Image (cartoon, rainbow, N blue to C red; front, side):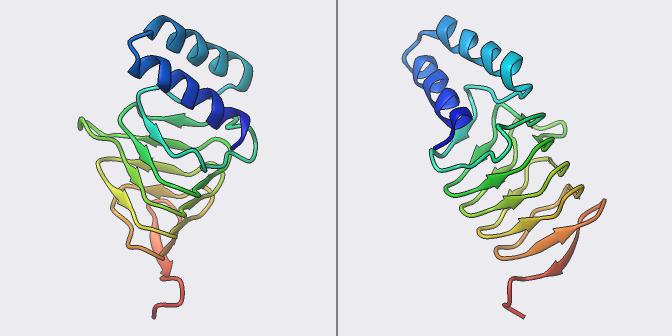
Length: 142
């Protein structure tokens, strides 16, 4: 577990225990020190890895990120006019500058290439690249 994940989990713990002031202070600290927006309301597994200390990462408050995901710098995980954010299942890799928008699900062990714009759900084990994202492989399940 890296620094960002630990801070977000602490902020979420305070939020869930009705100590929102402390959650907000941790959130603001993360935003100032690491230039990232990772709200304490989103669900992030403890094994999520942010290799570059989540530099420039923006995550929607209703997003869910599963176990063993890797999220590189300048990634946006948000929604498009819906109350639900994206769901990243276990083992998802998200390359630098990728954007994931909408009430969509990224399947287990999928790879999102750098700079991709994902607006549709991705099947498990797939690799998607480009803007808008196109599937280029399905992880050897062809």
